[in-house]
Length: 231
Ligand SMILES: Nc1ncnc2c1ncn2[C@@H]1O[C@H](COP(=O)(O)OP(=O)(O)OP(=O)(O)O)[C@@H](O)[C@H]1O
Ligand SMILES: O=P(O)(O)OC[C@H]1O[C@H](OP(=O)(O)OP(=O)(O)O)[C@H](O)[C@@H]1O
Image 1 (cartoon, rainbow, N blue to C red):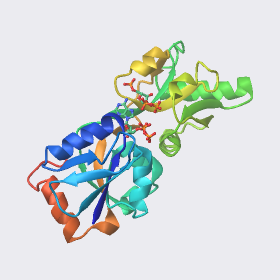
Image 2: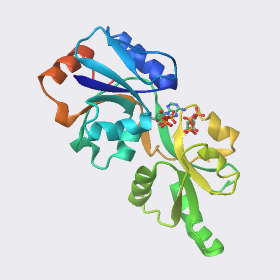
Image 3: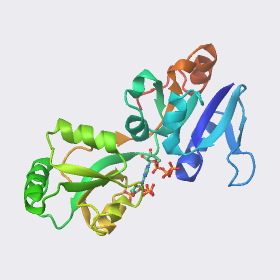
Image 4: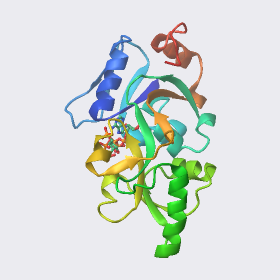
């Protein structure tokens, strides 16, 4: 049996159900909205597991599910060396979001990462502690700042409502996912004029350890070889 892990709520779950339905595989919840068991129709040998999007990378790597849908951001953040455990089967064309670094809109002299690095250096000298960046993407943000030689900062963990931390005076800047930009604007934050730390979208992943004839057949059914996998 191939266990398929799918986000248990919201738009990501609905769009995942639609993506599979377009390929003749009907996924549904077994019971009420609160029940996290599911049904699979239209293909044999697959069972559905409804999970938090954030837990799907770990469940794949641990071998508790063989296939899973989640954002590329969550896989790269949660699994160091993710590609040794997981195979990226196909991007799914929804759940697009950018991981970005944003500063208060009123920091007029901070437009790019060079400005940010200079402000971070001065901040430490002036305040006696490092400038705080609120985020849940610790691994990705650290790696990106290190690659750009920005060192005078500290990460503050924020697992939700991250854009509120600046107004609440628990951070000076934030690194989070954005799509429409509305949450940033509503919180008077502005994205640095740089390429995003990461461009993410919902993606179908398989556990490398689960690759074999049954998995190959299922993948061929979902993503026909002639289809463009890089879309
Ligand atoms: N505004 C958005 N637009 C598009 N995609 C988004 C947006 N916010 C988050 N995502 C993507 O959705 C996925 C799930 O995000 P997140 O972990 O925040 O989910 P959640 O709904 O809080 O789920 P859970 O708390 O159950 O893990 C991530 O891959 C993320 O990139
Ligand atoms: O650019 P926008 O379209 O405004 O979207 C960005 C928001 O969406 C996500 O939050 P989500 O609603 O998943 O809640 P969270 O803050 O609990 O992660 C993300 O963390 C941002 O807060």
